[in-house]
Amino acid sequence: MKQEIKVFLEKIESAKSILLTVHKNPDGDALCTMLALYQLICLNYGKECVCVYDGNVPEALHYVALRGRAHYFEHVDLSNAFDLAILLDYGTVNNIGGTRPALDAAKFLVEIDHHKNDNKIGHLCLDDDTASATACLLYDIMIEAGWKYDDKVLQVLALGILTDTGNFKYARDGRPLRIMANLVEQGIEINKLLELLNNKPRKTIQTEARVVADAEFFYKNRLAVAIVDSDAYKNLDGRGENALSLLGQIKGVEYIALLKQQKKNQIGVSLRSKNLPVNKIAEQLGGGGHMFAAGAVVRDSLENVKKNIIDIFKEV
Ligand SMILES: [Mn+2]
Image 1 (cartoon, rainbow, N blue to C red):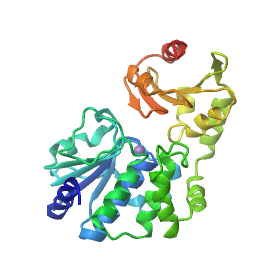
Image 2 (image 1 turned 135 degrees about the vertical axis):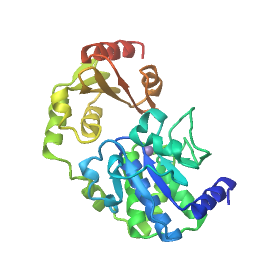
Image 3 (image 1 turned 30 degrees about the vertical axis):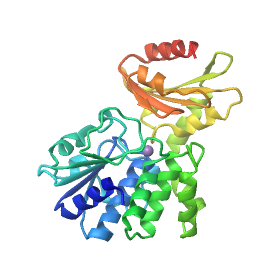
Image 4 (image 1 turned 180 degrees about the horizontal axis):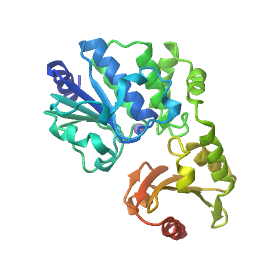
């Protein structure tokens, strides 16, 4: 067994209190991997971890197994330092949000992540930035540790992989498919999981459809820019993945920028690309992410951010 995993298992073994957390506004991979680890520690060590997040969980994820185990951080007493904290799928420190003080106070911090990150904060880092999802990393740990698991663990791991790879579209190598093959052989039904995610609020889907209808196109239609203004933003559930996906289906579109007015002068930017990497552009805007899916939060007016984005893509 790898030395790091050995240390990880020893830390779980000896901890009296364990905190699990993920990036703010958890997506499917973050939430589901946290829930899987919660259940694995329960099954294998008889220990109940505390699972917390900052921000909102998309409504579509409200029906996943074990959902009730994860709590908004302000609803939980985090004042006593935890023996062990485990931070999953966080990307960069800026993404952690309100659970950060509890992580800093913990006696030992383990991170499990698949994002590229030059500023790691874990005492032990079980990271691999070539992995397609943090769920893949946890699956490998589970197998290497020889942990028992149940159907709920398999369900949430499968959901983590499906959501983070966009149903395998963004699989970076064969690993997520091999893992999913194992999960399917053990009873996971992919169509049922995809159905389970079809629980988005009507106002979200209608808002995303409107945003797509109003999108603008630049540079011979290679760049699509879509705007979610502050009124529409209230209706969004998650990152606007449907709008991004629809725009990506348009012939000739190579890049998509979805600008979300979170506050008057705070714009969330989601970038998608079919060919050339956009993570460098996201970094230029103060954010980061993966090669073909990246983002940033820019503190400026919607008009300025839009103008700036269109300018940046002139060079691309
Ligand atoms: Mn992820």
